Length: 402
Image 1 (tube, rainbow, N blue to C red):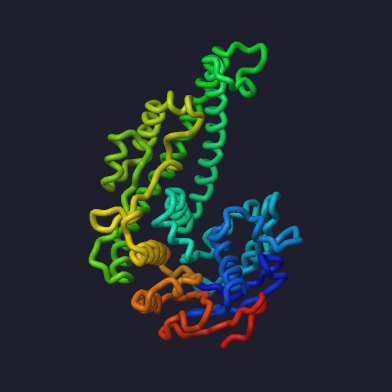
Image 2 (cartoon, rainbow, N blue to C red):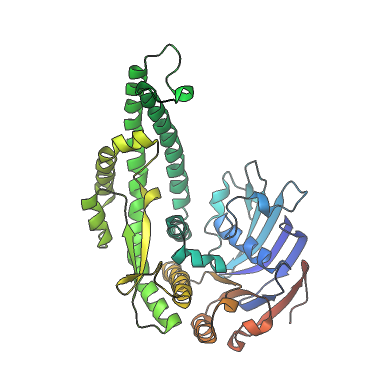
């Protein structure tokens, strides 16, 4: 699999731009702020419908424009597909595949698969649990695009259930004399009756959360089981460190269930659903008191370790980089194994962050990838063994290949 051509309009700093690509290594060289990362960001957006740099679409649209356009020609098994995306903040984005409009944008997922490593990935090791949850869920979607819909459904359930919990907390608070009258029971409605109705409705949303949440949790646990062997091998190869990389799933389920999951066990979906319902029952009073969702995949974490020590807080800067890189390389090899062909590997300003030893080891590990896209501030950042086509990017202008 490789991207043959990229065309963008009003995307980031570019009014228009076209980039011809081919299999092998392509490097975009330019100082910071010249626009090279914008190009690989557009390719990543085609694969994931999200940016690795920002959480919303608004910054992707050039200032003063209403929308941005991305077109990518993708070759797989000698057949070419054309993906066209229209990004319109505040409105529904639109997508075409081979010039045919799609009813839902996410139906393009799976046409292109990428694994992107960027300086922001250090947060996988040093950052909050949300970074690691996103890593798992994004990889799930790359592996099987249908999980995009499951994630969307789960997020909607969380919003609805969270609003109900806040309402119940407010009503019960007003009964205890707290000053939360503005969102308490409607005038003329007995607070006790309103509270009972809110709690009955909450039981329905418990069922929804447990049904969809168990599916997402099951998929994450299976993914992690398949990913860890690749992670351990990739970390050893890129770091030359004898410590073993580990990844343990820390669940928000009740203690007995969480311990089972932490050992690497993958219970069936129906059993996980039962565990979630029991866990929700155990924290019901706390949830209503605080007005927040306390149990579910959105509260879980992936605990990364080196030998007996947690990586977060104990790993050196170099070890943290190696771990983050190991996670991305593990994702690459897992997708390669699953799909039978290579996803596109994108390395965004990575080599400047690595010492010479890690640079050379990384270069040796990716030499056989079908397509590698690299951005670098200066040519010397990229090892000579990755010589290939190079473009100079200056103030949003793409030079001729060299």
